[in-house]
Amino acid sequence: MCTDISFKDSFNDGASTLEFSYIYDGSLMLKNGDVVRLTNTSETDGIFFGKVFKVSMDESRKVEVKAYDQLRYGKAKDIITVKAGEDDISTLTAMMCSSLNLKAGVHSAVSYKSQSDKVKYQDTWLDIIYDMIADTLTNTGEWYRLADVYGEVRIQNLRDLQLPLVIGDNSLATGYSWEKSIDDEFYNIVKISWMNESSGKAQTYQEYDQESVNKYGNLLYYEHSDSKNGSDVAKLKDKAKKLLQLYNYEKESIKISCIGDHSVRAGCSIYGSIEDIALNRRLIVKSVTHSYLPVHTMELEVIAN
Image 1 (cartoon, rainbow, N blue to C red):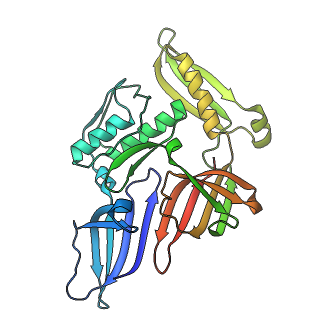
Image 2: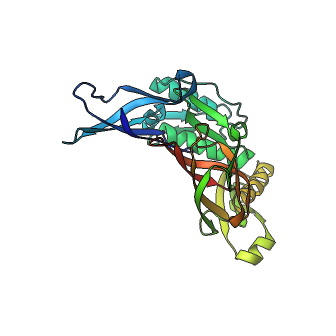
Image 3: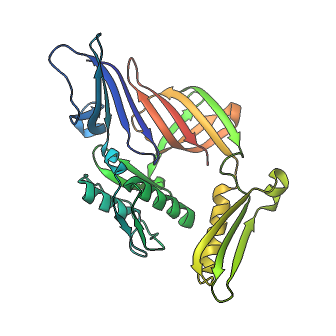
């Protein structure tokens, strides 16, 4: 029945969306709140499970529908309490699912806990969970994805989402665009400060890459910690080292047009191989848009770590 179908998924950036259209025959008119599924051949290999949020039609009788998965409800704001030493990405996700009546799936184990008590009043559930994912990455080097996987909200370690799939020259790709930059989120000096309550003076610790500084100039990242009297100096030094590792490399933006593969979702990683840009390594999918008519194709934006 459909005249076009498009499924878009972005890495830790809200709900995935399914947009499609069909010609109204006088009998089937989808309504907001209706459940929509996208599957390959059956419900056992589901791709998208969500609800309709927008329906429109014009005089041509072409009905256009937009549906979201469960994470759409995570845009809600509430009074949300985060407890130091207790709450992590998984517990916060479980709290969101319980509060918003969402179906939760199995979560990957997460060792990093919140370092301070917080009460959030103006943040959405998604904002709080994404902030905790960023804190976990900064402090442990482990990266996680929050996603609705065919009707189940899950926290997954990106290490578990590596696909045995090569995309590039002579392998699915039909085109690409590429950019390398130090203009955004690039730092080769990391400085962390904290207040010494005994002396009443700020103390600092700094990590830097001299070779990178010589090549690109001074690009400084600064952060002030709530740590009192440097009681966690060892942790702060380790955090500075991890931040330098995280930010001290040229950011590559690569977009690839290719033949579709249902296994590719945001947060998964594939192996990229494009000789022209010396690409020969694993890539994290930042966003993917699957289009199904007349044939299955996909547009990828990838993160080249």
